Length: 436
Image (tube, rainbow, N blue to C red):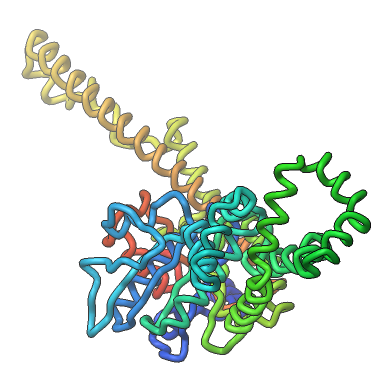
């Protein structure tokens, strides 16, 4: 790379994300890894947890990834709603715990913790509640917020690393509590709550006169049985509705606090970085503290001085015989003095041996040329990938030059154990791809 190109690359380069400084800062209590699906959020969160623990932090990693890759990589048979200590990770008093969000169990814990046993049982066995807690839109994200709030309130860990739910929609993790709170506080719920709140004859009169038409319509739309289940659920949950929004608001404020750091995780691909740019903008709009961008699976080369064009030209020369052995053709060339002393039989035998040897040498050279040309073409493809990734990164950087970036070199295989997570952690700390 020329001096001019080196200076331009330095000037255009975004600030480097210092991951170790972030992990070592005792004021940082929560790290939230967010980004589009399939960009390595779970692996990044786990690698951060391992590295922080081995640098002396007491860490819990909360994943919402149902694929259970985190448990496997940490050598745990399975994860559930209870933090489990990870063996084989320690350093200067540090510890690592991991857990996977159980959405329904978290909802059940909220019900059990905020109502008396009789009412809790009525809610837990209600068919509408069972549907709501198992798959209502936004419930998973809301429960992730609830669990984060619970972990922070316990104060058993000095660092919580959150792997946000996989989703194509940007920042559902932040949006869902508001949506669920709006549903629970909405007009529909308040209408269904009204008869229970009025009570007695007045309540029945209100239901018969003011809601007869509405309930008739709802019964047709929802079915009489479902409508009854909803009304029973609403009556039982009446005292808890305010708590949902209160806790959601408290957790939202916690995410805005100085002790929280958001890491947007992406891959050096156009779609992923467009999504990352949207995350960055939304976080700024919500006044969430952004630490930087983690760019996973970045390709590099230790031979970047050999451009793709030069590599392809060299490969073509080899394949077309453009590079000629100037010493070939020895067979058949004889010294005149030797001709006078050798018999025709000796000359024929020697010539046959030389021709055979030269044929073997030519065959070996041809094999080497084929292999070399293939390697040159592979290098050219790698350089083209590197150039394409660089252009994609440059577009993101031009839009958000203030965002610090850590580039993580692509690994040859999947991460499936603690050694792999440590390798990712080292690349995160280095912040640049191999060969850069």
